[in-house]
Every structure is written in C-alpha cells, then in structure tokens.
Image (cartoon, rainbow, N blue to C red; front, side, top):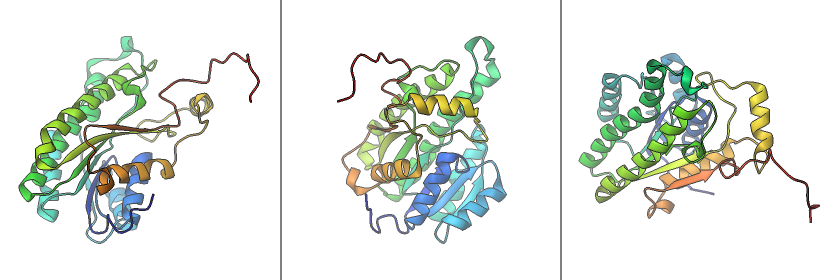
Length: 262
C-alpha cells in the first residue's frame, strides 16, 4: 500500500521503540518522512535510533512507563517541541511467562502497569494536547490475539490485552467528537525482545503451528499501522485490525489427516 507523502512532517510517537515491533514502526514511519518521538528505557540507544531513522526534529526520550510522573514529563516534552502529535502508537508491552500460582503482586502490577495503565496515561496526555491544538489525530494500540485466545503461562498478559481492547473502544467512543480515532492493531508473532525474550524452541513451535506458517515481518506490521493512521482509515475507530497469519484463529498443532490436499 502506497501512502505517498502523507506522513511527511507528521509527528509520530512510538513507545517501546527499542523492541522488535517498535523498531519496525520507527523505521517505517521515519522512512515515510515522519518526525518521531521514540521512547523506551535506554536514552543513548533512543538518540541513535531517532537520528538514524527519523526526519529532522525527531528525538528520543527515555521513560519508565510505570512512573506516572515520567509519562507526564514525556507528554510535556512533546507539547513543548511539537504542540501536539499527529499519531500516538502505544506499542510498549511485556510478555512474561509464568503460571498464575507463581505470579506475585509485584509481577502482576508490572504487567498491568506497562500493558494497560501506561496506555491510558499516554493517551490521556497526548489526546488532551491534540484537542487543544484542534488536531484530528490517530491513536493506535498494539494489541494481540491473546485478547481473545487464552495462553498457558500468560494469563495476566492475555487479561491485559483483553482490557486493552475495551480501553480502545472506550477512548474511540469518547474522542470521536474531537475527530481523534483510536484503534488497535494485532500484529503477528515476532521472536521476542530483550524485555520479553522467547526460547528458540518456543519460537519454532509457534511458527510451525500458525495457519500461514511464518513469523511476522515489517512488511506485515508497518503498512497496517500506516493504514490505521492514514486518511484511508478516516471512517475507522474503535476497531481492531488483526494481521497475524491466522495465529489467533486456531492452531495447526492438532491435525487429522483424513483427506489429501486438492
């Protein structure tokens, strides 16, 4: 899908920018000419990425998304530099593995703080700036098929994504009067990150069980995000776009060979 010059000089925020999907999004929107605000935990790495892929005026801002005060500081920096963003992509998230009986209060809070609470606080702050600036922006929440399909040893993660789906619709409803659209994107399986590492054997098993049989790539995720952020989706809000190779609809693990392929 060709978006031409639509994102040139647009202001795009990507949280979790140093993760797998975050980098894809930063590189994709940067290549399209957008000015980027990239946030994660490592300031030097963020600075390097913003310089490498973003248009002039791009910047990195290290932020602990569990800290409401740090989020307020990030929002204030965006306001000072840009006035308001055009696109907010709430991409940051953690995917820890652990049985419910082994999940203590601290780990529970960490998952919900990053995957859900931070999305609310970021959206509240950035959308307020959009409204004051009269900017009809787009908010994209990176969700998961886990919102609908429970995963063993990932119940709190699945819960956070189910709640994110409702938060997306709630904000989509409330912000519609200001011309701000809020949607969710469920990207396909990617092979983990330093924040949420996945064993190689797990990666192989998941990929083999997927209907379309391969992991996700930038060519899958970036055009989908750009569509949701573009004028082509101007009549789309409160929706979820699933681009996951069929991973959320079922597994190829259990198969009875009763009929030969046509």
